Length: 201
Image: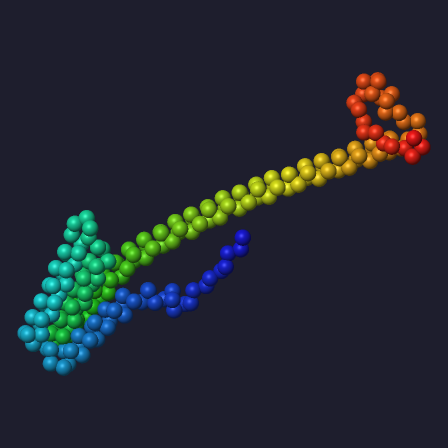
């Protein structure tokens, strides 16, 4: 069984690796644009970002609480909270050093979380490939056994047909011999043979 070989596009392989850096860089750039448009030292804007970030943290905490917690929603809420905090600091601060420091920290945390997800994904992919290979090998083994069994049955049928043909030829040849008397064979205790009608009878 030949499996089709699929080659992923290099961009499809590279995109997940650069996504965390692109996300945090986008938040930093938007925060600095916001800073240049009047958010610097604006208490109202800072308070808004604090409220939004706190709300996102609370949503993440509620989503992850209990046994029925949804890790995807919780992770999204915590990521949104971190992004809002980074945007708030980038918009409120007058220098670039604190926003850059927070950008580095946010990028490191994002890559740490993504690496955990990538590890889990690789483990699940490897397990799936292993199970698929084992199933394929089991099916190939069953197919080989069935092919051998069918071949053996065909050979038995051929040998039986060849034996029957040889027996019929031998009986016809023996019945055609001059002086062949089936009655004498029966009286000698041999099994009865089919009688052949001779034209001279």
